[in-house]
Length: 115
Length: 115
Image (cartoon, rainbow over all chains, first blue to last red; front, side, top):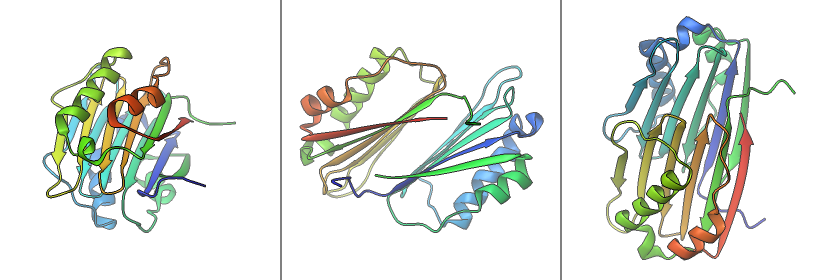
């Protein structure tokens, strides 16, 4: 329908997560590392990380050969959101299973948008 | 419908753009600066930029207080894709008008996803 053909973006929202886990940058970073490794994605430069003050969450942004990967966490709401934008076809990642295991998510909504 | 409430993401795909403009990092960066200024968004740290070699495009990633802003260009296809993820409500940006004026886009598809 006239849509561009530059890949696919996954928007993944995990709810009901453990607040302490969402404040743990090392843990969230290890989830990102798993995604990158499992999908054979290639990081360019140093990823950007920011730990928001107080009870707030973390943000991580990775510039990839294949486009980008982002995470934002909201401990006060028990929510973590991921974006994975790939300009090459990739096999799906088991978001639901892994985010439940790693972040204690009770629900994981996976949406995919062709671009 | 049980959807998380951590903001809104705009996925904006501009097609039919001028290839030379999509290879011009300074120009693409000036578009990003306009978006940030007009929407009163706040950048944390230094944005990441990468200029892909040869005839390829550029990528820019901005970590924001309000979440993130990303751009990828594909000169060989005449396409530029933007992501703006805001965890606070924002007024809309005139994507169609500005990307037509600045990048020579012939069509701009704006999609918005609540998260």
